[in-house]
Image (cartoon, rainbow, N blue to C red):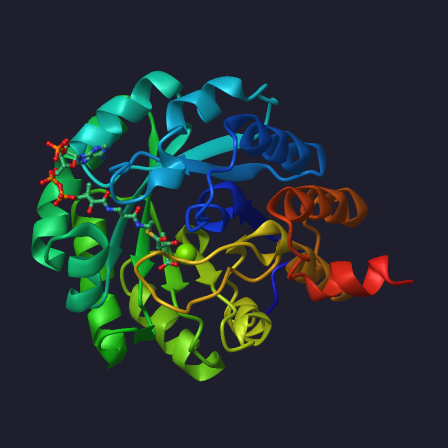
Amino acid sequence: TLPSRVQLIDVGPRDGLQNEKTPVPAAVKVALVHRLQAAGLTEIEVTSFVSPKWVPQMADNAEVMAGIARQPGVRYSVLTPNLKGFEAAVPTRPDEIVVFGAASEAFSQKNINCSIAESIERFAPVVEAARAAGIEVRGAMSCTVGCPYEGDIAPERVGYLAGLMKQIGVQRVDVADTIGVGTPRQVQRAFEATLAHFDLDHVSGHFHDTYGQALSNTLSALQMGVWNFQSSVAGLGGCPYAKGATGNVATEDVVYLLRGMGIDTGIDLDALIDAGVFISEQLGRPTQSRVARALLAR
Ligand code: HMG
Ligand code: MG
């Protein structure tokens, strides 16, 4: 049965902007967060506390977090791959931190420079410290259907990673199609493997739209009862360690889909489209949201 309500996390400021070659001013990132919360987003993935040598665009993480005028009821999350990142993030008061692993060994090496087993060893003290500090912990699982280096990924490997995440105390996990290659049945199998370790309320879908499958994959997860999804305003983004991968599915397109199905998101589509237009103009490129393009052309 379909959920009656869906919770969306906009990852645009983080996943969407991390791959931009020219530095986006911190003030623009802050303005984007403000527009997203004004549009009704109640969780926003703001930035990441990773090495500025690896991802220069996120080097202004603390400045961006400090610049946000926080709105009650909105949760602000940040990526922290290790204790160093976590310690830098804590003073910026995130509501939630995200550790990020991969179902593929090769992707783990390219993205965070260690094996899956080593990544879990690094995450464990981060999760422990976060939980002790009352900060919630999400675990992103990359390459749950396909990997740019290894090709197809079997559901068993997703289950293996989800089990490890559960063991170290991660509270909820994202099933990510990093390179947007998945199709509905594959995505459902990745969720089935994850649901052996986490319940329906603690799994979310994170679909990049490289092959145009993200909305179909969203629907396939909805049909399983999944009600948490990540998406990116204007369809911004891509991962620097997944060559050729495009952005996440556009939040506008997901909101349109859900609204049409009578599923509540609490998001104002017009205000969201404005937010997407704002950041697209700042980046000097058209929005990737099909819904925004269609509605703006009317
Ligand atoms: P490493 O080189 O193995 O780490 O990198 P290290 O501990 O050996 O440290 C090396 C240097 O980095 C040192 O500096 C550290 O201080 C520094 P140096 O002595 O050379 O000057 N360092 C840090 N600096 C700032 N913050 C930190 C930090 N840690 C170490 N937290 C590391 C390991 C994970 C840090 C590195 O590989 C990295 O930063 N990778 C970036 C990964 C990334 O941001 N990827 C994109 C996000 S994930 C994603 O997009 C996927 C997702 O959307 C889901 C999906 O779609 O699949 C979530
Ligand atoms: Mg991503």
